[in-house]
Image (tube, rainbow, N blue to C red):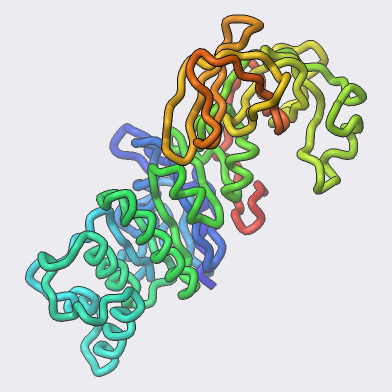
Length: 387
């Protein structure tokens, strides 16, 4: 078993706290993406797991093996942890064969292992080439093969595709993750790219200011963010003020609030919210609002759809992205503006009247959102829930 566990880990750079009470369980063989803004502690977490930074609190284990605790840390080469950095960092004076086999002891099996890995990453015909004769994607494949060579329990990917062009990046990222899943290697991927995290990972860990603020499947983190900040970080949002109404019998969708959470055909709602978009079916996140309470309303742009005789708006801007566009709409009922994601063949023109409807329950949060102690929980991605 190569389950990676961080238990209330703390790390500082001098007087600056980089990780605070970070607890996380990464199941054996899974792919977990660490997502967060610059300086949130993503790379510090990897450095701690790799043994390149000591922990000041808590402990890190892989399976039953202790890797780190305060005053006691296995050397990086004894951890069974592989590292693939943002830049391939190959040895320029060594060819591909020598780079892949650099960390392996001499012996007849070494040649077999190098050949096996070269074939695995699609570089069998490149073993005699030096790094300066490789493309960026090929160099990253060599770096991955080198990290896999000793048969590590855990692979750490520190934004390994960031330096590549967007087309190659997505192609190579998917190939690499598919390969690691085939090898059943426990994988931790650090990325700034939310689409990459949502597309590749079994579970997504969202970090901010040295803490874990949410863990879940990509679908859960995107559809059910625990805070407005998480919602806006993992995707585009529409945010409005609203007033909560606990009136399930007026629900046009199901008229039975108590059934929503148990019926797979329903989105799930816990009441209604009145906003500039009218009376919306809504789901309160992390709290139980009372009837008449002012709240913050969050929607995804793709939850707004064109609807004949829908909520009247006027198109004031179109941000074209090829396959679709974010269409900015001014509501006829007031000064509010919202954005809807519309498929490219059906884009309206600026100045055109445009009716919209809402096809998903709104997410509702306290008007003054405060996150307290989120990382004091142990995030167990094997169940995608806290324990």
